[in-house]
Amino acid sequence: MARLESVCTGNCTESSNLSPSALLTRMTNERNSLPIYSETQMFSRWWLLVIFAAALLPTIFIYIGISDKTPRNIFGPALIGPVLVALLIGFSNLKTELRPEGLSYNFFPFHLRWHFIPIEDIEKIYVRKYSPLGEYGGWGIRGFAKNRAFNVKGSMGIQLELRNGKRILFGTQKPEEWEKVIKEQFADSLT
Image (cartoon, rainbow, N blue to C red; front, top):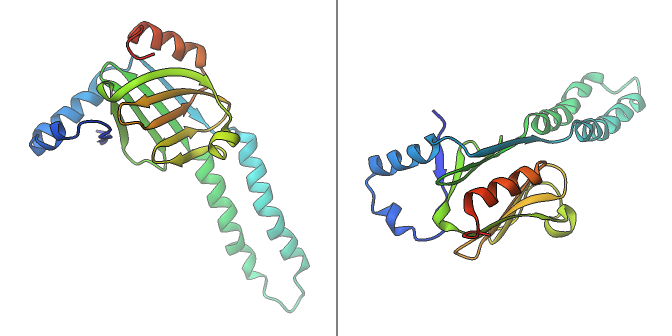
């Protein structure tokens, strides 16, 4: 069973007053409801090749330039870094799920547990165009405590404005579908 970490974004006293077993039951029930809509995204594969080549080329040039007196057994260890970076990016994925109780998300391998934002903590939710480089400095897990972004590609996102003043943006490759689901589920209450 996947573990779920509840993101306490509003009134945390309710959760802190629950016994550990009641809190676990609540968190499990939140995660066990069927998603209304979900999306899984991965980094573009061409980025993986560019990063791998950029990291690998200097290693190859160093290897070619080594004199006969220098041991050649440094080539293997020099490849470990580029290969690990390529694997990390290659297996990374962002999963976002809208549920009746709130929004769940996981950015593997950076999040080992699912995170959950209860619907009560969300003041507004809407789809918007954004500038990954201009607003957040790139892709991945970006931003600071009050303004975070989780994205892998593109410039469209699901913006959450929470009751405690925090803003969280989740990148999406399916903005039209998210917009439709948000309008159907929340009408004017959260948009």
